[in-house]
Image (cartoon, rainbow, N blue to C red; front, side, top):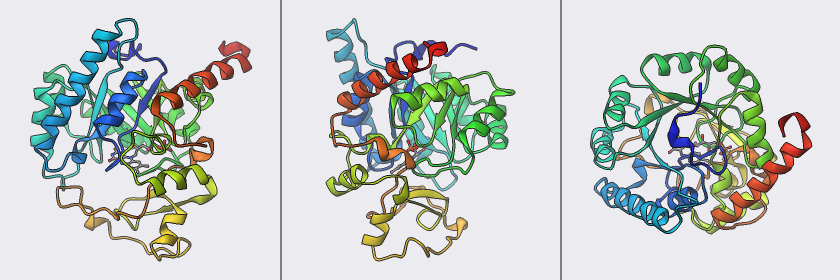
Length: 317
Ligand SMILES: Cc1cc2nc3c(=O)[nH]c(=O)nc-3n(C[C@H](O)[C@H](O)[C@H](O)COP(=O)(O)O)c2cc1C
């Protein structure tokens, strides 16, 4: 099956992943202008009423870009909705997405039929993120248009599956839009995701160390200085397993090699969610991130790496 037409405008087959706290309109606009899908969690707009302003800002900035550069229009943007039952803002945030006819909705933590139907009513497309084939089946049964396969090594709530296994199992029955998430940080890895059977690479951590990201300078620097040895997998911080920067755990006075297990019933993704502010999420792929730079520069480099990777593999060229 071919990708829906909204992906036709992409310069590279990349969806920038939504990042709690970090993704804000400035980052989303830079990503879309650079030619990849930009995204942010609705929950980053606090108070909830700020979402209206943010969606207006993104919509207007991208329309202005398209008027000024009709030859290289901006890529579409996505809003991430945490559909977990603890998210008490979900209905209001979906109503705001309907107001702006947000092109793409990315849902996480429990597929819901009515959310998919609501997005379809304004012409939106829904991608649901999953960590295994069973959840993938459930999401498609509930009406998601596409999937984000979150493999081992991803930042935030990562899975434990090899990307090879996960994409292979999903592609055995699903021919709709499929993005691969987990440790992708180079143009070569984007091509590898496509070679494996994914349509799109879904990239988070590599965008934290960019000028436009709303992250502490120390966090950005830690990413530049770290590699996969510095990533710890734990469920202590949100109740769901995820990957975090080891030096940030040490800085917070905890022992990264002896973290407690968390109680999943304490999961809270609503307006009263209190993140561990100084424990920094990050995936394993950051060995390729060597500077804090503008999003546009990072995408330029990935585009060059992508072309080089195609040349290296004659059959893919
Ligand atoms: C700091 C951080 C915050 C994240 N916040 C969210 C979030 O709010 N919603 C979500 O669906 N995924 C979130 N993720 C997961 C990403 O969307 C994506 O799956 C992941 O970053 C991809 O792996 P990578 O970081 O190795 O590229 C987050 C990841 C990180 C690193």
